[in-house]
Length: 288
Image (cartoon, rainbow, N blue to C red; front, side, top):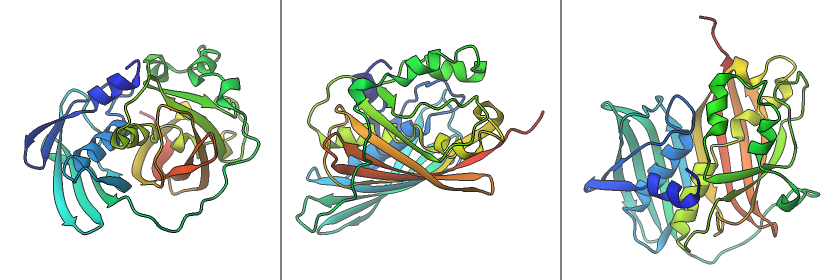
């Protein structure tokens, strides 16, 4: 997908019955459905069942089975509660008669209330002075395994400009922190639900790899089996996904073959608009 218009089109859903939707998959270069696609489509399925004046404020999901790229995904939405201020939905993504993803989402009326936030990291350089991570990856083309080359070659609808440049093929232990500027490629309309869907899609990038940084002296990325296990996201304030957002990530812990990561999204003006946490499988590949 070359831009965000293609992303919105390819993550759109067909309604086939009350509370039942069907979505198609797209190839990002991995052997299974990209987790960000399922996140975006599940959130979209839930939003199709709530009143227009309510927007998502939180979203929690578990990746249960790898998704099959060759088959459509069925999304079943359960209307858990329709309250005076909040609306709750449960969403299950199904392939081959089995759940591959289970999630819940909560939507809220826009309301006034107390307001504070943490500060954006200081001394982070502007995205205008940085380059796309695809250009950086070209410098390592000779060292990248064939299994990862396709992932890097396929056009992406999101642009990523990392602040810190890491060499994942160098045996150097680094602190588990990173900052990445992200922005959808192309202009979007003003529908906040589309901006939330795009950010949910983008939020599955860069998280789990941050938990590898302290362990590069032990193992490098091609030697690892990695997969998202669960993912939670909170939308604090309205934003535009087609304008630069700083994705500030840290990994507080890795243990028992799992890496735990957190991230905050800030506008260039320093406004905190969303937060995300994820835990994923991270272990050495088994020898065949």
